[in-house]
Length: 538
Image (cartoon, rainbow, N blue to C red; front, side):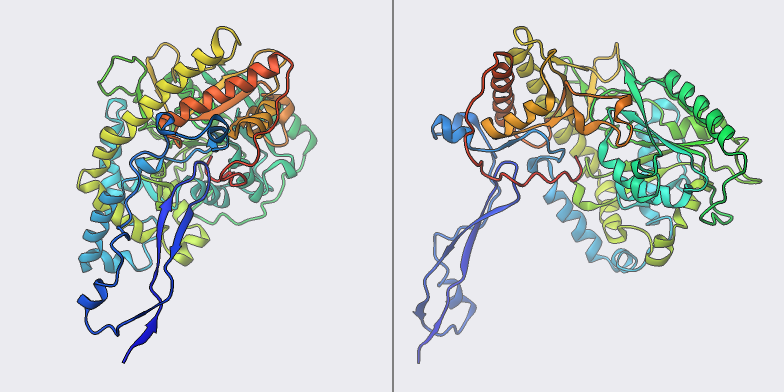
């Protein structure tokens, strides 16, 4: 007796630059086949052409493109997306770490349960050791009680604001400008955004956020506020005994800032903490690029980083603040760390480093007490990843060298294509003035006079199938007049492969040249992947 069954659809993964995954499927026709009586007989039915999926070794190479020039232009290049390249994701090492975690009931049972409020304890302890080694030259101590496991930097920013700010007490949020602008909606959610008139821009200078300007602005703001509000405003939320509400929040990316790439010097870090203590401010520093730094000297192969102390290290060392409640030391600075740039954003795991009392208070956020620690199972897997030495290996041997090459390539290509004859400048080739070190994911460009970044970005997309981030995106929402960036572009070198980076800058050069010459060109049409410009995590 014979029966008719469909043969399966065989799929292969085809990455498309700048787009979500695109699947190209081949459907085998329904055919009459003998009844399957054994695994062997089933395996004989699988066509020989249906090879197992392997990730392509090169996502994009200019030299391998056989298409016409117009077809090249029709391939989207995304220099906006601040994601790690697929080739920088340690999938095999993570698989081994997950196998270890899920093979041992002593690991997977607690890993699959509600976790303790501050997070998976083995990871807290390993992170304390790892961070102490990483910041060893800055004198950082090792204390697991100063670490809280989070669901990543964005989730923890929201949790910090939920726990330690109050619309009736917190007067303003002061954000370094240019700003990682996707933080602005998180402030909005906390009642401290542009809608409430609470966001303030503090412009950077050549060394990062201008702390002298910040101190002046805070002083003037508080004097005006106190003169207009003679009665103390009531708290909307009850902080309870484990938390307090700060008068101000200061937000910045201290090391390898997004988008400018600048790193705050040690002197400025100390001054910033002192200013926070003077005005009862909480400084939230997104420290997501601290471990992604390298030498900018082309011939240098040695590892080189700016190992500066975190703001939280400086603050903890200063001890009690006059604003601290009785018998509490909450402090005035928190380091917001994440594995998103080190392993992959999909792990949704990070950490906060701050004083013991601050960490405990953060762990008592309502959502944590109800649902348990964030990313409990993933934290168990990452713990195995770390104790096996794979995190250090991945960063040192894979991530840093790749980013170093890409950074050098994009800077050199910008200079070649748009430098001398067009006047386009790379704002910061090193993260700190006088240091031959850079880091992070981005370069920040300055366009010549008369060239508007928004027009460049629009025409780059329409004419060259190129996506870049215009400077206006990084203005602080609600306080744009204080710090405008109409002549700046941010280029990401983390997502696209090296050939596409070079081609992308060449396309950008054609757009800028056309604008400078007063010309206009026709659009090349809809690019592959056009429309998939999600701003998540950029």
